[in-house]
Image 1: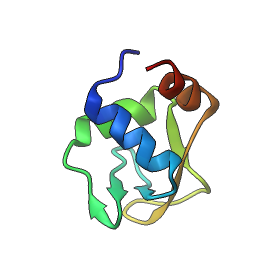
Image 2: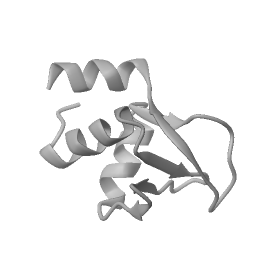
Image 3: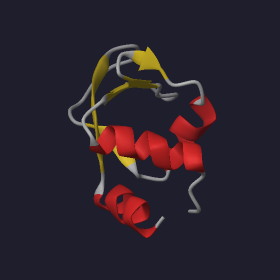
Image 4: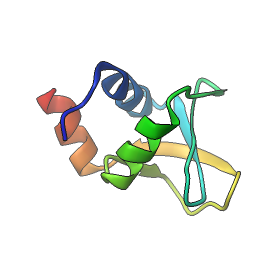
Length: 78
């Protein structure tokens, strides 16, 4: 997956511990407590397995986000 500049910034925020993700079939990403403006990129990153919630959550509830091994590799390669 080729990462856009925005996607790389989103993954860097996750890597820095500044991001939360919601549960549900259409997850949302929050950075520094604010909703991320690109929901499509969030969905793409989650469905590609590059980021995930640190623990189980349910619809509308935020938990810390973390990079997966694939996410770390994608970020390092970009």
